[in-house]
Every structure is written in structure tokens, then in C-alpha cells.
Image 1 (cartoon, helix red, strand yellow):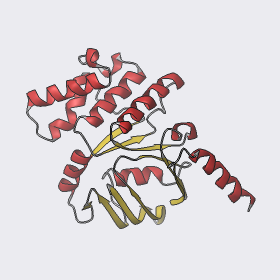
Image 2 (cartoon, one colour):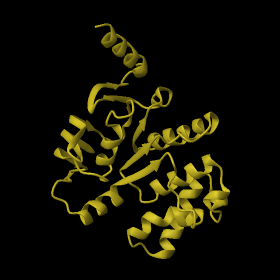
Image 3 (cartoon, helix red, strand yellow):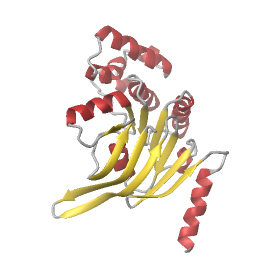
Image 4 (cartoon, rainbow, N blue to C red):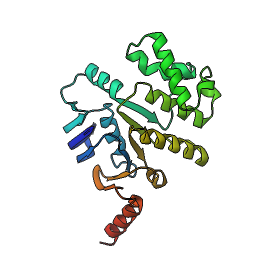
Length: 245
């Protein structure tokens, strides 16, 4: 089991008010799965992604990443775990405009204190893998949106993480480019990467083999495609049943 989440709660305090972003979330994710987490704004899916990526901690409950419980880890150890185990792909790319493409891809390796020559070689290999070896010396503002997202994917892969977290990875892209990025993510999954994608787009969720539907900080549905089942169709049917009850 790569991920174990047990009775996760996350409470944010805003002045005298409390916002319950997660309300007792429990699930597990095996290595090699491709999971979509979907839900409306405020459902808790982004909060859950932040905890899975060790960017945040639960208020209560247990989160275990590849056998390591994050409770009790200080910030430095949590950062090291995140850097070694997780690669992030964001909707807004989060590239550093002052750096060229290969330097952006190298950033996680800098935090790993890797030798300069080795990290340059590995970054170039990742750029070749996503089809951007010829753009390594360009800056992000010289690239298209799809190319920037490919750079972000190369950066996510450069540490050879166990887990890739993608937060609305096609949200800022046109339909054709978004489809190309989804094809790239699908190929990574087929190569054995564990991929978790947060999205509000059911069409994008169809690319995954498991579908977690969240609402009001809870998991409402958890469908798996084990035999070619239309998991999005199952979601629609379950939603319709709830609305008619």
C-alpha cells in the first residue's frame, strides 16, 4: 500500500469560526493506480491533495505515505519525505520565470543536494522524455501553455517519485492541448507510476481507473474500473439515485 488515510479530519480556524475541510476520510491507494478525485468547490479535494503531498498535516487521523506516518515528523523531515516521494503538477505550472527550462526542471534536485553535472544530465533526460529536449534553454514565457505543462511534468518526474499528484493539470489549456497532456499522463501510468489527479472535469476523470467523489469533506463514492466498467456512468447513476430519494 502506497497511501493509507485513516479517519482524516482537517479543521481551519478563521477568527472565531471553524471550517471543517475534511470530515473523517478513510481510503487506501495501491502502487500503480490512476485515481481521479472529483468534487465541487469546497468539497475538500484540494485539502486532501495537500495532505497526500505532505504540504499540510491533518488536524486528526493518520496519514501514512509508503510506510511512513507523517504524524510526529518535524518540518525538515516532512520536506525530505515530500521531495523524495512526491512529484507535483499544478494547473498554473508554477515555473520560475527567471530560470530557463532545464534550470526549472533541476529545482527539486537542488534541494536533494545533487551534484551539478548529474542534475543537469538528469533534467535533460526528463525533457527528452516529454518531447522538449530542444527547448531546454528557453524561458517559460517563450513556450506555449502545453509546453509549460510538459516542463512541469518533467520537473515532477526528475526525482523519480513514487507518487505524482496532478491538480487540474489541463485547467489552463485548450481542448486539444489538454488531450495531449492527458495522453502523456496516461503513458506515465502505463509505465508504472502512481497518479492521483484532482479535477472537476468528468471527461478528464474518464482517463483514470478509479474514481473518488467528494462532497462536504467526505467521500461519497469510490468506484474502481476492474473490468472495463464505466465508472463515470456509475457516478451519474448514483448521483441521480441520491437526488430522487
